[in-house]
Structure formats: C-alpha cells, structure tokens
Image 1 (cartoon, rainbow, N blue to C red):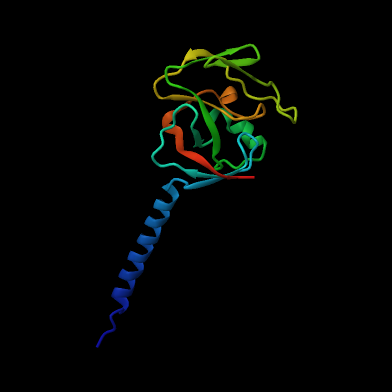
Image 2 (image 1 turned 45 degrees about the vertical axis):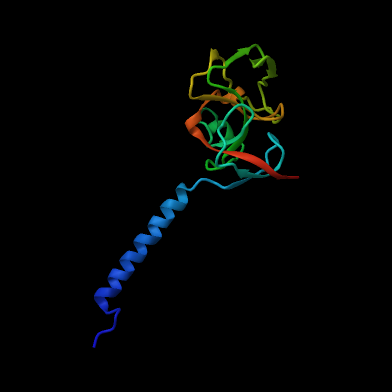
Length: 170
C-alpha cells in the first residue's frame, strides 16, 4: 500500500505549493497600497486611506512613484526608491501652468519656487509655460518646502498609484 504522498506525489505537491507561493508574491507585489503613512511635511502628517472610487481630479490627494526627474534629488536625501510621494492635484489636463521667474502661475494663483532646499542643495527646476495635456496632472504639496511638480514637472495621470483621503493626522 502506498501513502497518498509517495515520492511522485510529494514532488507534485511541492511544485504546486512553490507555484502558488510565487504567484501570491507576484500578486502581492502588484497590489496597490490600501493605506499610506505620510511623514513628510508636504501634507499633514498622518494616515491616508485609499479611496478606490475617486478620480485624480483637481484637489485630490494622490500617491505616485518617484518621477524620473526627481529621483536623483530624492536619493540625495536618502529616500528609498520604492517610497511613494503623496501630493495634491493642483492642475489637470487643459489647465495652463507657467513658470515665471521664481514662481509657478496656475489657476489664478502664484506659487513660489525655491532654488535650493533647506539644506542648501540645488533643487531641480521645471521651466515651461504650457497647457497641460489631457493625461497630465500638476501636483503641489501644502507647504512651500514641498518637493513637487514645481521641481519635477507635470506627471502622467497613469502614473498615479491611487487617490487617498486623510484618515488620521498627527
């Protein structure tokens, strides 16, 4: 009499188990974050929960992977590449956004742009004046020291990882 897990069956069970674990790891790696903890001063510090039904429109709080134009600067701060940025949408496709001197003009307001951060490091600069394309967003933080689209430029709407809402701030 043979055991239900004789040598042939053991290898089959082991193979299926490894496959399921690998598949689970791939799915987990691609699962969007349901919650984020923001410790940067760009927006209120706290817990942000994903709003699965929300669109990334003007005023929405969104999370995104670090844009290519900002990665070198963020790396110089010691920020790991996998850390998401969280910002507010200030302008959407069709809106005009212009860099004029030391400010960005958008939606009837002027937002100052700094040449250096608080450590004295030179900040990257976005220097354009144009109407955003249909799939573009311009992001700003709530504070003057936020590292946002003033420095890395507009992002593609498709680069947004999700829309989030403040849940608990400290």
